[in-house]
Image (cartoon, rainbow, N blue to C red):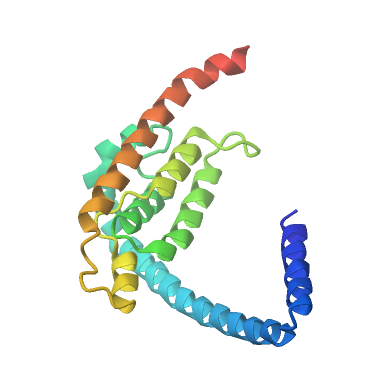
Length: 197
């Protein structure tokens, strides 16, 4: 479906440019967009490689196990079905930690790794488990202590005070995360009732 939407938008754009005699802008815009896409991809590859490497070092050095012990009460409350020593727990902690540090796109590979680990202990492979739903909801809200990516973008754009959004981001992301946790618990309470009907 998305392919048809993109094709429709491109066709409309070409027709509009043709009617207004600006076909040269299509070529210029296409080349400029392609260059930006390649540059963005290379930047994302660098960031993702960095965080995957850090995750590997943390895993090999035992740092993930230490984080697991420190955060185990909170994580156990959120993910009661995940064994505390399972590799999924480490992947979840790394993902939530990267989210807290506001690493933006660097969270994606960590989140995929966590989902893969959660799928290994999912009894119903065709249906997302409670832990997977909770994890996805937490990643969506993205509780952020330090919005590093946004600060970097604001700084690069010439902002006079790029860190002025820290307080607002903290309050908003904390409110969203707490709301998600409450809704998640309510869904776990009422979903079995609906399933029996």
